[in-house]
Amino acid sequence: MSIESRAPGVVQVGGRSRYVFDRAPLLIYWEMTRACDLACRHCRAEAIALPHPDELTTEEARALLRDARHFGPPLPHLVFTGGDPLKRADLFEVVGEARRLGFGVSLAPSGTALLSADVIRRLSAGIQSMSLSIDGSTAERHDAFRGVPGTFATTLQAAQWVRAAGIPLQINTLVTAETLDDLPHLYRLMQTLDIMRWSLFFLISVGRGRVLQEISPAESERLFHWLLDLGREAPFPIKTTEATHYRRVAYTRMRRAGMDEAAIARTPVGRGFGVRDGNGIMFVSHTGAVYPSGFLPVTAGSVRQASLVDLYRSSPLFTRLRDVTQLTGKCGVCPFAAICGGSRARAYAWTGDSMASDPLCPYQP
Image (cartoon, rainbow, N blue to C red; front, side, top):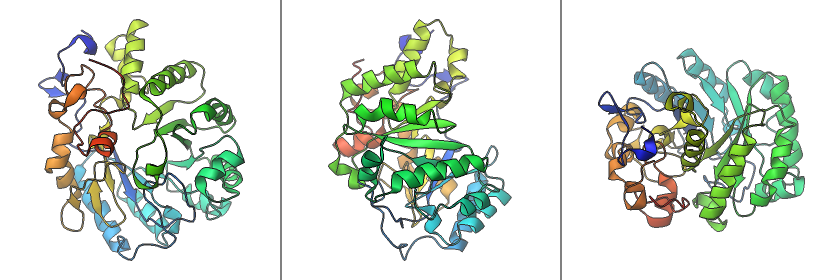
């Protein structure tokens, strides 16, 4: 029986949903600092030039890692982000501690002069992957987003150093009304960079991104079909962030092509079924506040007063977000709710209700 023909809600396996990540997140994003030398137009963090005086100390960072270890095996993967994590003087120390405790670590630095060949070589001993952002296929387009001339060239040079150091590289690209027509050109650029993944971040109107325009629901649907067609030839997987309804389109096409549930679950898209804000993902801010994701600005508490593990597993915010039966509007009756669930961050940005329908999805159940 296909997901589409089941009753709305959670797909049950042995009494529990295979798409509910209530024991531990797959990914923990830690915003190490909000300090950054760029001035990106879409910055979620509204980054600042200098470190915030109240950001977590080195010892608090160590305590955070020790606490996260209580999730137990398999441990979540850690993504150190910012701002720019290279603005933290203790970055190498914290990466080393995370590795000592058994965590896999990825890094999302900014494309600035701080990301030198020497720094990348030093990082190669501790991190499993790195992501860089490219939001335009030309220097003119990319630098206009980043707010600093020369950032495009700096990022391309850093990408070469990352691959020379043997670090798998993910490229992140923002999807907005302004970048949509450039995506085919960006794809051709991606083909030259020897990347492990191209991740498309669909704009959420938070932070500085409030001044930018999202693409329309119809445009998102056309884009998904184009991405799925690209997937047949692309030498790397293509991933979407804050566009979970991509899974509905992918699932429907794969079923029509004759793939069974087991085969679909093994695809890159299938392995992400169910993952969304607060379900398989959590975010820790520079001051220790805990959120379902970096794009959903509703906090469950702080690591300075509570256990990260307890907040993820038991806080009302996280437990509610993981329960698709509490979704409202058309998301609440959608037969794809279990694998998709909609962007809770976008629903909140548009309506103030994190359980409302995702306005970017055009599907009518």
